[in-house]
Amino acid sequence: MRKFLDDNFLLQNKTAERLYHEYAAPMPIIDYHCHLPVKDIADDHRFRDLQEIWLAGDHYKWRAMRTNGIDERYCTGDATPREKFDKWAETVPYTMRNPLYHWTHLELQRYFGITDLLSPATADKVWNNANEMLQQPEYSCRNLLKRMHVEVVCTTDDPADTLEYHEQLQRDFAEVKVYPAFRPDKAMAAGEPESYNAYLDKLGEAAGREIRSYDDLLEVLKARHDHFAAHGCRISDHGIETFVAEAYTEKEVKEIFARVRGGKALDEGSLRKLQTALLIELAYMDHEKGWVQQYHYGALRNNNSRMYEQLGPDTGFDSIDDTPVARNMARFLDRLAYAGKLTKTILYNLNPADNEVVATMAGNFQDGSIPGKIQFGAAWWFLDQKEGIERHLNALSALGLLSRFVGMLTDSRSFLSYPRHEYFRRILCNLLGSDIEAGLLPKDIDWIGQMVRNISYYNAKEYFNF
Image (cartoon, rainbow, N blue to C red; front, side, top):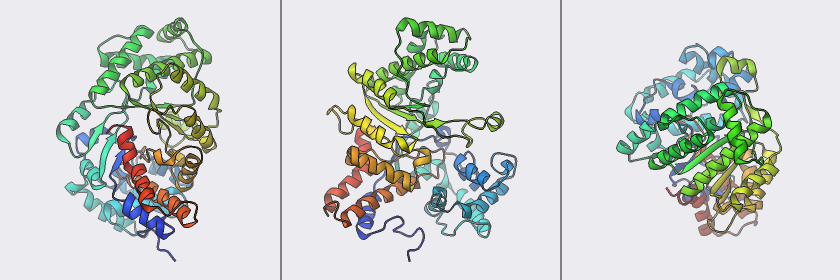
């Protein structure tokens, strides 16, 4: 019987073990999409305790705790840090077969050397030992990144952000390259005129120009795009409900923008036209600079209206959407390709039913200019667990080129999330090792081992030009 979380965790045959330990494990990490707070890295923040670094802001854990009957006070409320941790320790034994069970114990092992299974019986020991280590200088934010052999981090930044912390990091933190990523979601969120106009005022202030017209908005976005590029940015990212690809004229869009800038609510058709036009213009900017554009779609957000009013967004009340997407995605990408302005693109779906849709869509727009130019992005959010990753890799393998995949990312706000790269690499190696031992792939360890290295590291390094 195998021991839980031993050196060969998730590796079910000797070939998988060799691929992981010799080829995947030594590779540095390129985390090209995450939500780490860049200020914490710039300040080299030290966490006061395990609750702050591990539970605060983690809606994955909050969802599990609520499901386990834990009161909201211990998730987002006014309970003490130790009380919140104890409720998490109480919940962990009930998370078996949820990826949280694996992630929890990987994180305890990799960062703190703690091999105890977390439960009420071990909570005191885990809390005290981890907290003692967190007081040491080597557990500061910068040192945590270095500990996990992170080479590149791309944070997620709004166009109105000053990027002052990125400037600081580029001056005094050479060991890990930290770059901004351009996330203009709020510039497209015209469905609520009051909040949208407040944001436009903030965006204009950041650029030193008042936004009165649609042309002003485009000029300001271009100026901020240039500002990000000057700070090393080479990636944009869009969190969209679904793809929009409405027909529109320039005159229509200018009139629509004028209405919403004047405080008037837009009908659904007008909103989609404005959002389509903005997505297209932003894609043109990305193409001009040779950036990679990312599209994360398929989340149905803020479903629990009472809790949204109480806690706000990103607190654990989102789920998978099932809106049809293929036709609009095709129209959107085709418009860019037809104009000769389709840059490197990564498509992330949240509904696993779309795996084959996205994998085949990517093939429609490959043009032979760049290996893997259009990427079927890594299993994301609810899908970045063992079965979700395997389903993604199988669809990509069957319908595209797994060997050109740019690999895993954390998509996380936590400095303890880097074992997710290890988790992915172990699953990848097990998949390939199993195929080799079943005679489905040749036993060419040199070639397949290099393929593992490429997916783990080199493909991303080349694709993003790091």
